[in-house]
Amino acid sequence: MGIWERLGIEPTKDKRQIKRAYAARSREVHPEEKPEEFRMLYEAYQAALAYARREKEKPEETKDQKSQDRGKSGLKQEEEPSGKSAAEGFEQPKETEAERQLRAYLERQSEEQEEKLADFLEHWKEINNFELREPRVQEWWREYLQSKDFQSIQWHPKLLKLLSEEMEQKLSYDYVIRILFWDAYDFRHVEEDKGTAYQDDLKRLRKSLQPAFDLRMKEKAFERQLEEKRLAHENRVKSWIQIGIAAAVLLAVLVPFSVYRKVTAERRYVEAYMKEEYPETKFSKPEKITDSQEEAFYELYSKSHPDLPVTVRLEYDEKGRISARSEDYGLQLLEYYAEQYGMNWGRMEKGGYDWPEDYGNEMSVLYYSAPESLEEFCDTVMRMFQEQEELWDLSAIGIGKEDVLYPEIFVNGGMEDFSLVKSPFYRPWEMEAQELKQSVWEAYVQYMFHFEAWKLTAEQYAEWGPAYEELCKKLVEEIEADESFEEYGSWYELYLGEEAICDIYIPIYTGEWEEPLEYGQSITRRAKMFLIGDAYHYLLFQGADLTITDDGSGFAAELDGNICFFGEEPREEMIVVKAWCPKDQSSFSGEEEWEGANVVTGPEVEIE
Image 1 (cartoon, rainbow, N blue to C red):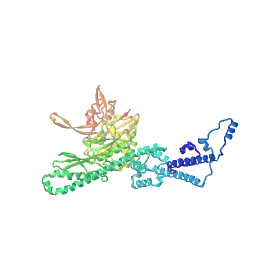
Image 2 (cartoon, one colour):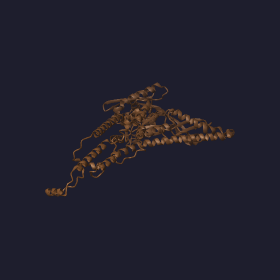
Image 3 (cartoon, one colour):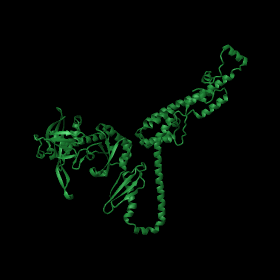
Image 4 (cartoon, rainbow, N blue to C red):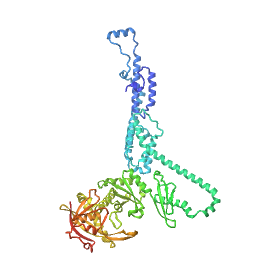
């Protein structure tokens, strides 16, 4: 770009016109905000003045002299220079003291801005960690972003480019960081300069910060609604006081006590219940949404998450008293953050599950896709609970694998009449990362051996077998320590080729279920049972002819041309399983061989 283009005028030797152009452009290019652009403008201004002085010092030529010059050269004389080379070709005038001081000031400004940029980058490296949970750290950033040090570089192109790129990424304490920078730049009042080179970066930065500002506006709108409701309530109370004295006796006689309790005392009960469950969270006044003789539902909102409607359920006994209560705020919180951190989740009702009473009637479960992804999954779970402390009010969370055949068993850690050693309920905020990974992995291995053993590969047998043997030992210890248990079983040795992998324990237990009869009646049946994965191992050990289904939903046993499919149920009667053993297999062929000892030793088997 030439000197005249920088000044925005045509080539001229009029100093007044040059000075007016420089004054107009210097108002648009401030030395503190755009030091490099201002320096180039100032140099263009000096070159233009030098050109004007040189042109005025030339003596006026007469017509005869011009003709002689043309005659001597034989060429048409060129017009006065009008481009960049004409002015820039002149020798620069000697620098005055004022000009030297201005140049030194601009150089100092540039160096100071580079130092402040480097200082900001050091702080920025530390902002995306857990320290922002502390109020004092947040206050430091708030003061720094309002300081002169930051304001002197906040429009610098390098800084705007950095922030526009970083803010597009997912940050820890996302809302806190974005709202601090929104306030620092105050985009509601920033007049966009379409001529600046960094306009695109400024737009990207504003777009990245906009969601945080919108959320804050929602929260403020919610607070205003609460305040308006409070004032309206106070006004209603005043009106009630003015007109209620005369009607108090009549109301006391006509309004049944149960209605009064449900209208006033019940609402206070809901408020106290939510405060007990979430002492650090502020909620709106609960509003009743449905009501019946058996139950009532209230709806309210938290100040921190006004977009999550919370439902509180109250159940009544025959006398109309509250007999049970439940709420779903913790479940919604976990599911909200699970989506933020890119995890899959589901919700299960207690109907077919057997978790502890204090976990409530519903449970949220986080799912991992494969055992190979367990380490990354557990790291994400730990990070989420470290960063989001409001999740610590949950009783526990379930963790399971996606697409298992028997999800209710995986979540329960077993069946009603047979429990495994590992329970898949966790409190990650009270655990170390490695402890969580190990526990989740052991629960998965134990489930696979007992319930989906036919899906295990030879490599998985070799890798997981020794650990599963230790889990079997713990299970046997529990069985032998409790005389009321009716379980017993047998140890078997697994081989991979000629190499012994491990010993596994196959338990047999007494199962009980209701079998329907005619006319709506039923009978209780009891029988010796195998878990379906253990049935697979048992038939394998007995040399049965087994075929795994293509979709992995179970396996089939063939004997004398007949075929039986196993896998539709997570357990099977022992007598049914034994019926598909080869007839020439004598070991453990009769039920009596299992009696008399909790643990006996079975034959060896080779895994292909």
